[in-house]
Image 1 (cartoon, rainbow, N blue to C red):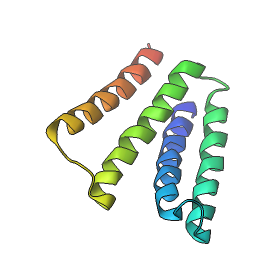
Image 2: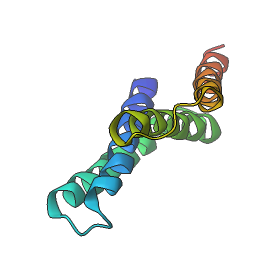
Image 3: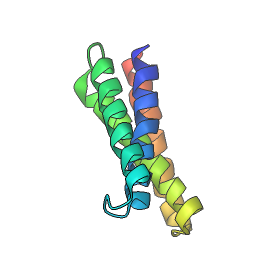
Length: 106
C-alpha cells in the first residue's frame, strides 16, 4: 500500500507542476485551486507512505515520478524539446525509480 501511495503522490506532483503553468502565476482561479489541491494530496500521500518506507527512497521515487511525468507532459502539452538526449535522460530517471523500488523490495 505504501508504494501505491508514493505512485499516486507522484501523479499528483505532476498535476500540481502542470497546474502551476496553467495557473499563470496563481492569477487564474480554477487552475490555482487544482494546483494547490494537487500539492496537498501529493504531500499527504507521500507522508503516509513514509510511515513505512525509508525517507530517501520514497522521496527519490516521488520526485522522479514527478520529474519524468512533468517533462513528458511538457513535451505533449507545451511543445517542449523532444531531442534524443532529453528522452534518454528521462529514461535514466525512470530506470532509477525502478531500481530504487526493486532494491527496497529485496
